[in-house]
Length: 416
Image (cartoon, rainbow, N blue to C red; front, side):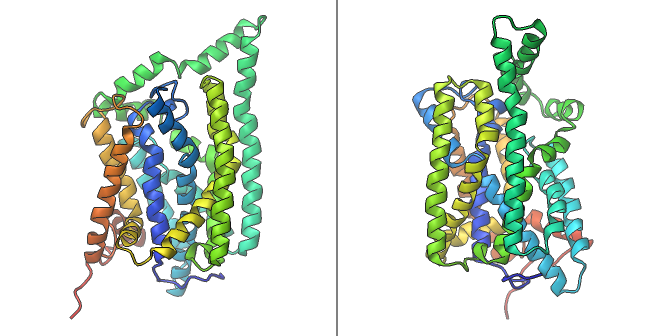
């Protein structure tokens, strides 16, 4: 396996990128923590369309929506290659090492989904990561070509699949629409109705057991469906991350001009397309069907552009401010990204769900970002001091120990 990354070496660049990603994921997920699910797609369904809330929605839509998850997927692929290289260097089986980690990650993901928060990505990553392993020996150029091909197939399939909602809406709106079509359309949009959102608010401001029971009774299939829906996005991103580890792009080894080029053109072009999609949603009165298509399917090409653009942009920041105290804290948050990711879910569900402070559905969209900043501060405050005394974050240590079948050394011994 060709790679520019020596085994068993930590890279500030990768750690810092992972830190930016895990912090950015909260900025993406905060609405889903605090409001009904469809509020993420359309502020008209929930969250309000007053000027501050509208600005918060369009800013998140253009700058954050999907891109931080995309960056996390890139880094997952890159980290996978490092772990494979480490296993090979130590004479261990790369397959046994990788699939052992994916097995336990899948269990963590299922626990996260059923007992903490419905927006889990760990189970998704475990399943897709098991497939990505099969591409590990491809050269970086071939990996990127295959990834782009798979991604574009996914874009076409998803656009056609979700696009059927538009045709159903048009058919149901016709003067001579058959009653069966009207009924099918009404059933589809019923889950976005005020009654449905009120029911969702009541559930999440209720008891903990009510939330868990609903998942086991009604939503048990969701972790299995998500990989089927997202494989054509997540797998290519992991493959691109694998390629960018091999060619050194995610290690800061590319020319400065290349990072500037990708950061500028990808973010500008992708951002302009996102702005156009946001405007299209707005002039259509935040129609739920349009918003869903634009957010999930039509935005796939600019989302890929901006994901790579953010990787280049953050790399420029890392290279410029590598010695700064703040960047060291961001990198520490990235080293403990697993703990920070699950810890964020625990903290945010405590703040918003009924078993905690019960603020679900009662905080305005723009005010939610105050909680984001607070959680960012917490990540930056605890991660670095912890890692000065311990080798891994708490959950990183648990995952590593389970995957290796023995307790791993945790505390850093003081130098004589």
